[in-house]
Length: 162
Length: 102
Length: 364
Image (cartoon, rainbow over all chains, first blue to last red; front, side, top):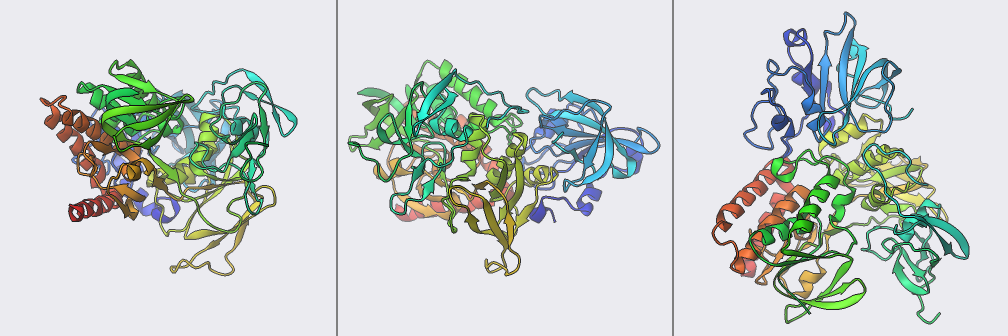
């Protein structure tokens, strides 16, 4: 369980998944924030209303998946690096997963690397589609990975070693 | 060892200087703490405990504790974790409480 | 002898904000800092901060330090004394300082103590071997001085500092073999824990250090599972081959000056140890002596900044500065503090403050 290991449970992940209908429309933010902490930059960074207003700064973020277009601004602003973008429409068998990235290793676009799951275990070989700087000043990089569709909710990192 | 690549930080260092540690010539960067230069050069033992003579390294690295006290340019009990390194400094591992007359 | 309205001791997040707030109301301020730079421990915080816009949320700690230091530098009402250590508090209310090798005293009408905290130690066999360092110390070594602390690191403590420093070790290219936590639950914000976990670092809750081994320096650490009575479970011992063990088991407020000044003190575990009794405006039992930040109770830097604001505003008000907008400003800051502490992660600080205020009533 998350409090003992740092790994969110499948149940927690299932609960934040957007509807299948929404996923079929294109990229959308997946916010893996499961603890009420005093923090609201995701909400203030999004100018599209993709996050519902916080009544209390300790509220869990709630997304409005219809307003979210998966632009990824919140990925760079989340101090907990807990926001990912999933695009299930990439191809028949593959999805795009965008992750925040704060390590020196910047893999070449088009290269193959191991995608890691929430335990840091190698889940599948993935292709690095894009490496870009987050639009936020001093922000993290954002890596967009092409992953097997069935791993779109498992792969959340790559190895930081070459 | 020094950090070569860092995703967030760049390290601005002063000019390279030479100093003497327990009789051996060493290199570090001017202005960095003596303990940092020693650590980068692989030195871990900075002092010895007063009663049992156990080896001690640094503990807090910000000048709160006394684990890193060394004899620097003849002065005992200098906190090497916050003492800026200078060209030609003489740095010695301290034994015991430190003697001003030694 | 130097003279000022407000003397602030310590230029970390609380002290910088205290100086800015007091000066903003019109008071003359002297800000004393023992390091040759401003920012306190913000200078090594490479992660983005939580909170809201008011506390620079989403900005990296190092940059918050730079923003505040620049504001202080540009403020004509603030005289900065770097490389200056406060030595003692005297009965005539003057504070003795050693400033760049010279002894001085500072006459002040109000004193704001923002001296921060020190890292706690943990006792186990061979806990004094070189290679066993405070987690904050390792953070200083790598993030301020750019020095690699070692090849393989184990971390004791899964609070925010332990988990954040573990992540920063990975960022510096150093292996972290495990985070060991005696409590059954992770104390850090879970998003921090998850980001370290997904880089492959195991977080071993209900585990403790049995002993460290090595001759001149740390060579390995033996850890074991503990049961619900905190006893090691036989047969669960594991040996970790590491040359660095970081200890991150809490902080203790640096309160020496407050004891010297005769502030009424109380030992409150939730706040990290001895703290000065104080009111909601951060004023201690000695009139015109204020506290803010970790010295007043261990908490996040975001809260420290707001506490500094409250102390600075109130110190200035006590001296007759900024009377016209004091209420409005201090109320807004108090509201920020309440917001930061309201949620489930604020439970410990709320419990500590409740005890502190209760203790204060008894003292009166």
